[in-house]
Length: 282
Image (cartoon, rainbow, N blue to C red):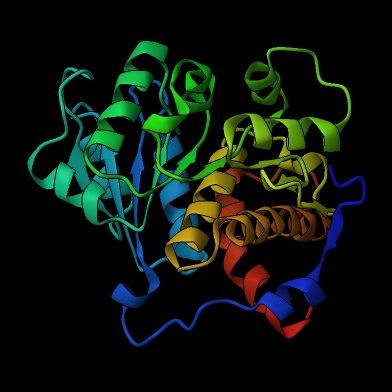
């Protein structure tokens, strides 16, 4: 295990750069976000907007039929498809097509039932999801899912409570815990400034602050990571870029407006944060 994480800042990220945006939205990739519920319809919206704000070309939101009309109005830049009424039903028709052709599928934001989340995750995989980002309830059910059922390219975006669930123990040390989760689940894992690859590579993002502890912040982070994956980056770099953009956006908002900004403010701040990181205009 690497005991010295590589610090993340504008110099590193400028060296990595971003994929050529091409000349159309198709060149910047497709994201499908599977989530939402009556109790938390906004989670998928925040994730979808975040993916677009970091440059993803197209986003489709797969949400329960009970909220699909409202979601479509709230984020008119996205496509919207309805999830099956029964979570155990396979994805069919337009939904299956969206998942199969997507560059990345994000599962979890806004779900509120573990059994339905597990069934929906497996349905997304059966529909042909090639790259997965898992967040929220999808992380809670992950220990019940055999790793070989999931695609090779997998990113986990837990908060500290969810990281404890993944490890099935109390947390001890940030770097050690994140690296252990990456190896245990053979996935790229990002949690509170640490991003680990299962091969032991580790990065540390020293940005953000108390303001990031706001409702919906994790949905924005997961959406940003998915957006960078869609653009064609290796998943570990997408997780680092997403973690940096999210944390640095929080720092900028805290400096400018103070504590109490909303997750929706974070989404709007992502675009100038990415621009300024590349230009070192901060």
